[in-house]
Image (cartoon, rainbow, N blue to C red; front, top):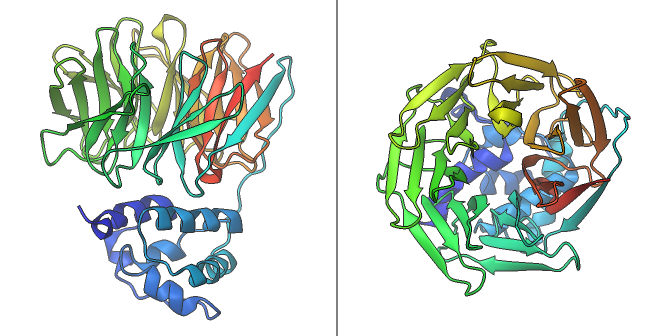
Amino acid sequence: MSTRSLLPVFAATLLCAAMPSHSQQKPVNLPEGPGKEQVQALCSGCHGLNRVMNSGYPQAYWNTVMRMMINFGVPIPPDQINLVTDYLAKHRPEKPKPDASIIHGPVKVAIREWQVPIPGSRPHDPLAARDGAIWYTGQMSNRLGRVDTKTGQVREYPLKSPLTAPHGLVEDGDGNIWFTGNQVAIIGKFDPRTGNVTEYKMPDPKARDPHSLAFAPDGMLFFTLQQSNMIGRLDSKSGEITLVTSPTPRSRPYGIMVNSKGVPHVALFGTNKIARIDPKTMEMKEYTLPEPRARPRRMAYGPNDVIYYADYPRGMLGRLDPESGNVTEWQSPGGPKSEPYGIVYTKGAVWYSESGTRPNTIVRFDPKTEQFQTWAIPSGGYIVRKMDVTPDGNPVIATSTINGVGVVEVK
């Protein structure tokens, strides 16, 4: 697959929100100013100027976007990078965001962060390995990275196929690191001891966008395919892949986790549902959330496998009891536009990040008292898409837009 054929998907994902096809056809009159001609030429070929002009970011993020595009093969002449970036930052600035709501409380934390070495790498999913290291997927640099949290040393490993766009990340019992290849439709296995990468290709050409993944105790690897509306299961011993389609059209299977009984659950981000997967038959049972506008994105299991979920567009934290079907919701401290995203359950509480506030926050919710406590991410955060938990129970984050990873050390 050529670089150019990959770019429309990434441009839509990275530069802006999706727009209706009819609006993409409307002519765009760019504001006058230095860089207009370059933007017209460089940004219209793959994804259309409407998408660019409906986005809005601060200067630092436009710098990151340019690096992402260059990493992925967009031919931007070096002497025009600053010109294009400055033009976009001036005419498409960041849209207003809610201020972070800082709520003090009894818990003390220290947030440590590390920068990854390649600008525009876009570390997407973090993984807290059993040896205490933090792994991450360099989605736009085609690498997996490992941070030694004791020394701060960062090492990156190139992947096998060009433009893999690694996304999800998980560790198996032998220390192998498994990942989803977002753009080349694979599940990959990386052996840190040898550097070897094994690729498992999707058996169906319609199976695109492998997204998130989670291991069951028996070695079965379950994963989502967001844009294909599918769920997959890979036998890590035989390499056999089984695919099923979600019964709800355009349900966008997103976050996935496996509970203590080996049963996977999936957040259906395109609708107001969470699904249960029968690990043997792959049959899906859907739980419909009471609010039609709900859009669960990521999840975490609490005691007794109760599901806590981040309702991204409504700014809500939700809890679903799969046994009874009961749903409880709480407004996130940052409000309806706070965009809760990455989430975990550890040390007796729910921890998640608000990706829509400025700065982004780490939020702790105590299920017993139903009280919130929040902290600003020192670097600003700027979109924590997923979280994980270290062996000693500390939440781990990846701040993808500002090219970092971090750990929330709970005192």
